[in-house]
Every structure is written in structure tokens, then in C-alpha cells.
Length: 292
Image (cartoon, rainbow, N blue to C red; front, side):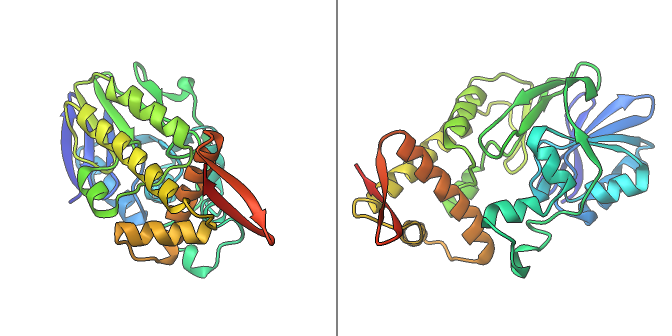
């Protein structure tokens, strides 16, 4: 754990719960792609850079989830490095309370204000092409969250962030976090057709060919959508749909799973409704969903 692995040329990643990309830029400088899930991850990443005689110049956040921005504040305070995050993700990185508040739909109670969902604030700036090192390419990967980005380095390494869940994770949980199902499926289709020297997803093994895993993720989205439709064969509230899905998948409810999977289920319901596959209506002031 926290070993530095060469992906291609001067592109590396730190093998940890949420992979951190490391790219040596020349002249004794380096940048990171994401900063890990907490201060300790940032501390370990900095120790690796210092061990190689490298100065950290910037952290490029793929998106604003706490397990990708958790080391931002530590790294910025120690090195003065720039922090960049794309579009709406930048607001979340600057004001991390937005993540648990968004997931819960109101002010998050204490159990939701943990480091798992709430990173430390950092002085993030908006990411655009002009912020990137020479010959870097930014890749749009919407769907998992508001404006997630990936990066292709000059060495041909592609950092895919959270657009793919591993086969192990899908086998264990069956459902992964999605904000926009339509955009997520489009992203998976695009990733399936990509070529690179090596692909580095944040939560799946690095691989030279990612098409099979992309297809598995597509099939899982279709499966979950079908399960939700089946539950909605009878008019069902959101809570009934969520409970039924957890029971079918053999999952155990926690506060964190309630907001993460709950947000995902709401996204599926919205997508299915927009596709004309389910309808929503009120009965005695209760919002119900029913398969058409």
C-alpha cells in the first residue's frame, strides 16, 4: 500500500485506496492527479516526492469527492502548490460541506460530517486547459459527478478517476455512485473505445485494455435499472425502492450508504422517468414511482 508504481515513462501512480497520479515534469518538479482520501494520504504522497527529490507544483483534482481531495489542504499548506478542480467541482473543493449537504439534501447531521464525505477546505482554482502541464490532455468524464475529468499524459497514460468500478466492487456491492445516468453511460461507451498505453482507474487495477471492464460497468447499470423497474411494478416510495434494492443486493444500510446509494437511486429514478419507463405521481401527499 502507498507504493509508487510506474505506469509509463514519467507517469506513475501511488497504489492506495484512491490512486494518486504522479507525473514528473522535468526540472525537479512534479504534479499530482488527485490527493487521496485524507491528510495521511497527502503526507505519504509528499514523502514519496521528497524521496525522489521532487518539488510539488500542482494538484489536479479529477472531481471533488472527499477521497480525491482529502490531501489537498495538507499538501497546499506544506508546499504552497496550486490546487485545480473542474467547473462545479471547484466550488465543492473550496467548500467541502457542499458534498454531504448535496447528498443528504439539507444540512448534514454529525455522522455525515466525517472525513469520508467531508474533506478539508483548500484554495482550489478553476481547472482549464491553460492550467495543465505541456502536452497534457484533459478528458471529459461526466456522469459519476458533476464535471469529472480524466487526464492523458504525454507518456500515453490515461487517468480515468471514478468512471469505472472494479469487478470485485461490482460483485460485492452491485451498484456504484452515479449522479447522471445518461451521461455516465455515454462516458462508459467513450472509454470502452479509447486507446492508451495504460489506463489507471482510481478504484480498479491499472490495465492496458479497459474495454471489458467498461462493458461490465455498462451491464451493471442496465441491471440496476431493471431491478428498480421491477420494484416499481407496484407504486413505491423512494424509501421502499431503496430498501428493496438493498435487500435484493444483500447490502446493509448505514448513514453513509443511505446518502450515497440513495442519491444514486434518485438519479436512476429521474433517468427512468425521463426515458418514459416509469412515472411519478402523488398519492395522499406521498411521491410514488410506478413502472409504465
